[in-house]
Image 1 (cartoon, one colour):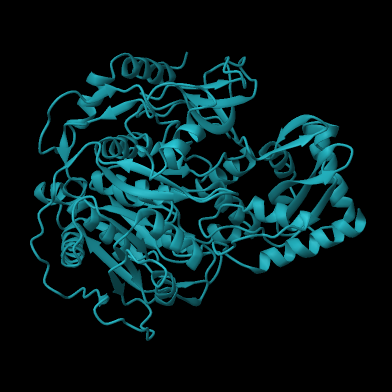
Image 2 (cartoon, helix red, strand yellow):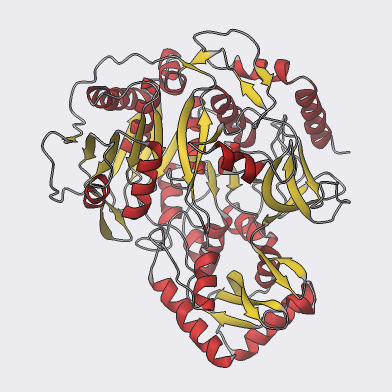
Length: 630
């Protein structure tokens, strides 16, 4: 066995055998105002553990005050760049002042420990500052992605019973101004719990301000002395609502102590972060990746991060590479979807810039296909940089599987997230819960609690039990497919609900998409099911081509054959259609449910998170020709 693999396996066994000792040692790297009782206490009900229940701390004090006390006040916390070219450098001391200004505003609005606030802001420095101010007061923040529409905002404010909403006059995206305050005004009119709206000036556009309710944030105001309120390890820190294809959003709730330790430990282990690094997690703070690896994880490590407001191809596809060159970014952490998007632009954009500052590449959000992995390493990593592919979920709080799980890099395998983090007891099983054989596909389960595990779903204990623990009693059901090879490496195959049932056979869409992407003409693909009277469903593929290729009938047949060869005749797409771009969220995830709805002629539902509405029209035109063909 490779020495690095052996080290990770041995450390994982030790962490599982004695979680009390292992996690107490990890927790002692951070500051606590009180340490009483055990770190880990088993419970008979989900999530089957209390973490740091009788320990107290304040996460913001650890994220900011601790670094300043250690002499890091003038260290850069964030290099910020707006889409329109605005730039700002925020040191830890600057961030401390911003946080205390926000905390003063929140306290003046009556916010106290345990109260909920909703934050609806673009990717500007005021967003992490408002989150940290909430944590400083012991309140619970609910960040709502600034691309969500009024109805989504109303649902989240109602469910959390927020008393304060933090927003801006607007933001910028793809060269356009996005009005945010008018959305909040309409939403708050339907939310009687809200008593104060705090507003940031971002665009300078005039917006109505309600007397007695609306207050401008003044970045030049004196920063008041606001004490950091101690919170118990099990007290909630934030709610993050996750959307499914059906039903109301789930309010995933994370606690203070366990989440803090997990964010700190995974940030250090997965990325090997140092004070000289410039870390860029190219996600949106509105998603959990941004919570853990733009806000809490980097700040707990005293690191410097890049924060970018805009789209990756605005005004040209060179924007990311310009940013890396300008700020000397050393670690880039992004999604496979974003990587494939840049593949579709071609190599010349990255090739025109100096990316020599990079030392590590990360992948997050979904399984990375080997072709995207190789492109990423070849054209962004100069053919030599390691890629730390990661698997985790909103519910897990931070990375669960990664090539640097033990702090040292294990041998890489393109497309595999490799090994579990110490303390993660993860397995792949049959639907009856029995283990699958090495190399076979199965469902992902986690057998024991870990510190970053969510506390539950806000206001919905029954749904928490039914969604995550009923299928495999006593075990966390991740809802993903995976396989494990003979080295113990995990290969994640996508969501179990992203499965086609063709003639009684279950086919994961990601496997079909990966087969398409192996073709040199294909940059991106999405596969959905089309109803079929005989076989139940048949695959339908939407494809984005690389520069220099033309979407001809001959190429479509070639791609159908590629899937046939790779997986089998059952998986061969009924049809392949070519589009210039796929419908994606602004965080870069392909909206397969939208594609499926369009193809089937159903209502596409809420598309407020789409990066570009025109992509739906493209898919609609392709689907129209498909239905005519059928």
